[in-house]
Length: 106
Image 1 (cartoon, rainbow, N blue to C red):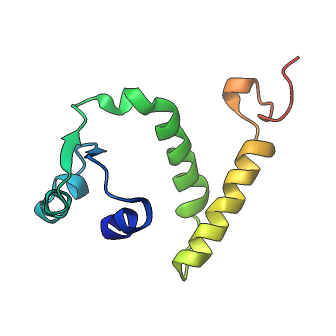
Image 2: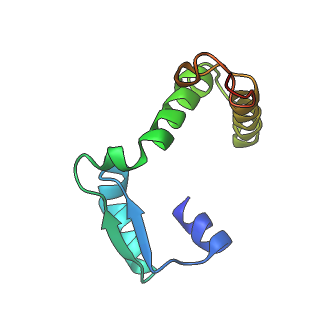
Image 3: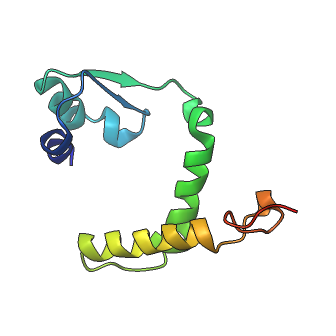
């Protein structure tokens, strides 16, 4: 995944991650540094910096990804893309008084 990202988007000066085990594993750290990139890890509790994105991905995982067993990356990508369209256009949000994001608030 990391090699594909570098090939597709170029090599950044710094790769920033959280401290999840997949990002602190020797293989990941080595792969980043082998490409000449610096590695920056957010501090403990930094999830608050991206609370809205973290909440979105929790919804994606529990309402879509964990519900279906995908047979391929292509199938997963299509399903998640469809879900995100629904999430942004039709899903009621509690923070919006059960309105959808596309409807103006009264």
